[in-house]
Image 1 (cartoon, helix red, strand yellow):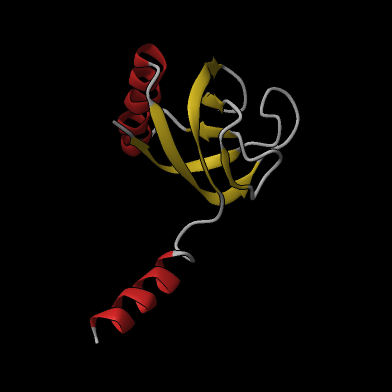
Image 2 (cartoon, rainbow, N blue to C red):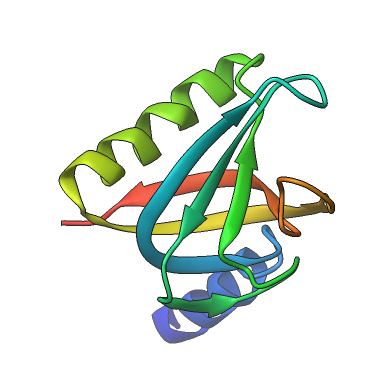
Length: 110
């Protein structure tokens, strides 16, 4: 029975976010453009892209959750720790986004 619950929860949770990627933060790039976004770029780790290369995500620092999310890539960049990021499927193109996806969550590993 527990095996079926685990399988069901994995299937349902996989639809709760769009793209995901695991790697190290290479750049945290705030831009006073398009309402003010902070772009987070990751190295060549691995994942399942929803937008562009899948290695770029953006945060809206004007929201309470955006302020909380912003602390994680800053810590990850300074400590060179691995992160796991998932997005919500909302993509933006053009400069400077490089086809980035809105960040839903970020997990600092290790």
